[in-house]
Image (cartoon, rainbow, N blue to C red; front, side, top):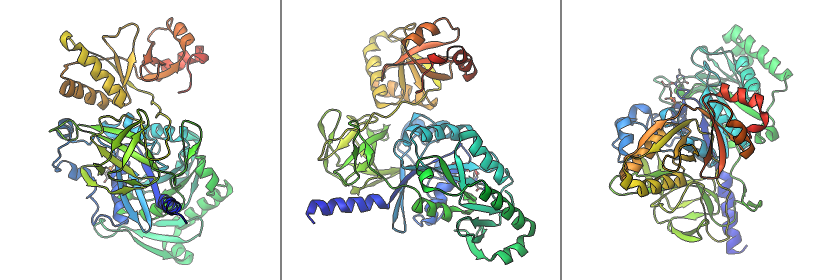
Length: 527
Ligand code: GDP
């Protein structure tokens, strides 16, 4: 084998070892707890709580944005990497709560699969639904973990029904709980029929205690719980809810597991499913329509920008998902947009407050490039064979505000700042005919994006701005004909998204949008 062929087979092997995924969930479903439990299980951290437990967050001394400190929240999202046996797991953070923003959606452009984490007592919740919608649009395979089974919650079959009815994803449980929510005894593996008793370890900070048990013993010990679980399994067998690899990878069905992250119950099973079933990185479509194989030379794209992590000097970190080849710190890569070289001396692995310098990375990994002021969201970087990945999609904004400055002498800087923030994807900028160029409209998925934008306009561009919130909550794409017709509707405004010249119709709420769409279905186009 030639040197090159050897190197590329090494890359293919490394890519095959990787699993890059994100957890999609609603706040409080247990994402942080699960992250810790997964990392604990993989034994990268000695004790649960060391990753980014909320309890610890407040005490961490941070040099990140002042705003972040004041509010005690994390504005960043990046990747936690850990090994599990021979597998390298990259868990990308999807910020929720007040941090929910367009970045949260963008993370899903950089993963190969997702774990949908549901609270057994709540089922599908709004933020989960929004994130799932992005997975659906991108055909990302989704595994489901029903969490908090140690506490009273919904009926297991009812939860399966809810998933199938509300989001049209066929649940194919891999394990089935013995004992209703709040009475968790363990799970039956539907593929092998083996029952594993699960118990929280004393204190709960350690791995769960698991023990395989014969059906006879389980029947005797768990009586009615055992009978019910087996009846439910028979019902499932009749609905053909069996795991099917093709359907899962096509994002049509979802393998389901049950557990309780807080007690590490079912966490081992989830890790094993990630290993066995979740797809490794694969060839990625490029703008030419051809796919870039994972073993070609280095390439990646920026899915997130983080500004001002270091207050002492203006700093930008670009988070890059590696798509192909081997990345080596210090290598000179090409910025596909400008053709300019970009040096990667300061490549880092960043998660939460921690930063480590990294020396190499492979497809599926995330690298943070420091000093990346020349880069923007969606930009492609490559070495060797040129490549360009498609621009990242914009996601439907839900918050709108007119931004203006009363300082006329600062208007040039104001314009430059707005352009910069738009280019970086901090907010979407809309042009409103009615309001004119002096008063652009900022649009965001989460209101925190406004805070970041105004903070940066003030600190980096020296412009004090006013925000005037607009009473709209939904936006839908339309076209020029649509705009003319919508002029006759009250409480609807059409604006142009500067980034891609898309016309967006803004509505005060989804009911109003539905009424208008009911009258003129041709006006609103799919995003
Ligand atoms: P996040 O907002 O999704 O990151 O949720 P957290 O991980 O912070 O969890 C929210 C709350 O639910 C915390 O009080 C956790 O201790 C609790 N929690 C998480 N997982 C479980 C679980 O499996 N069982 C129970 N009973 N509580 C849980």
